[in-house]
Image (cartoon, rainbow, N blue to C red; front, side, top):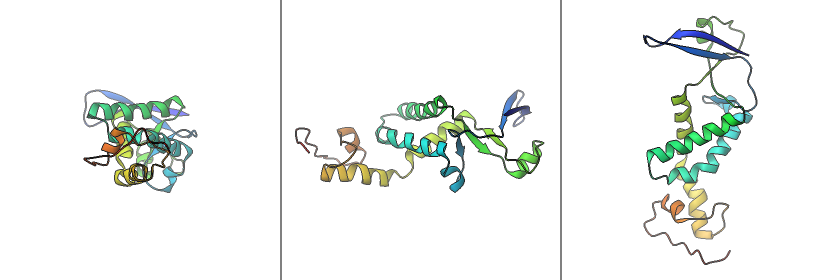
Length: 167
């Protein structure tokens, strides 16, 4: 169930429709830290989507290309019926007129959602490169086949990749 309230924000002349959410679906992604958001199915699905596009993001040639990758992840979450939500603190919920005993979430704005996707794509870059590229280049055994673009993510000036080798 969604409850809408008109609010004027930051002394702007226009009002924005704020949507409050009281019931989560399994594909919702909670913005925030801690084990609560991290353990949700929607957040796990989101992290898996990020992982599937991370190598591409790390070697993207421009900010616009990176924005398109992040936007694609956001769109994929929404296509599954997921929403990006932020939990209101007890004080914020009370200020908005809700009882303290209920959990209240609000839809995150578009810039926050895109920034969350980009930040998650950037997160643990060094570990990702070490696990997925370094070992792939040295052992030839990885789920991610080394490509010149992915090898560039390690900043190795002379990547040695033999496309004719088997194994």
